[in-house]
Length: 306
Image (tube, rainbow, N blue to C red; front, side, top):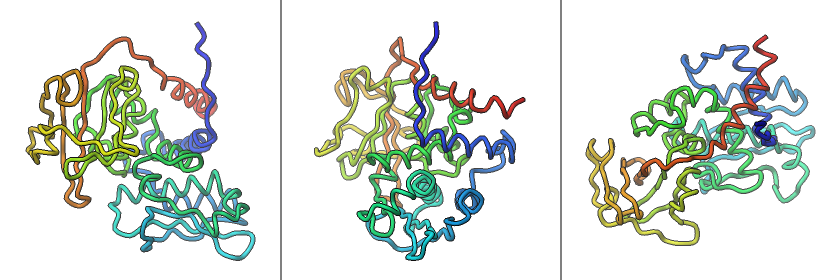
């Protein structure tokens, strides 16, 4: 049986090409030594691929209401600057820079020529942190996630069938130099397990993300244009942040869903929010939709292995 190939997005194609280049130069085991130096990569890559219109600076500035921006000066050909908002953790900053680098690689011509961008593109928390942007914001997110956390390496650390703890995901986040949130969202993209991430504060969900397997069985939490109140016995509500709750406690059917769940919960004092990871019991069969992406990467990398 021949499985039809899913057409790769431009964001995946471009990030895959850079990933292959980095694997060739630094070795396929490069993440064992450290994450992508995204700021330096953006400067070096742009100077070699577009020397007439490169990224000149990567700065950290106070840009209220935004996580990051890609801006250009008045002269032509354009000279570009990537900006991250002050006060972000190192992990969040790395993902922000990756997102803005994605805009440079994928969208700089559009941003330059479309007057509605008015000197650049400014990206808010929803677009970068929650990965809820549309159109070019979604493409920049896809680029950043694939470049900073390549699936062919990520899956070797946590298989698609594994039910990870927050400790497991924190280890992965350190490997790629990103935030725990970014690593968890990346894992949710390919896992075969039924899982949900809920980010909350004061008993209400700010936003939530669902794995494909959980979505297929109708288990999700709606937060867009609505206020979702967490269950009264949820650890985020009771403020029970012991190691036991971080490792996972059982919540019976009727608390979150019509099935029992394993609930893992931690809190971030820095950002004044809680992260809850819900694991539902496995149900078979599960469609392996993400395998197409891995096959495509393997095919793209074949010439480099010879």
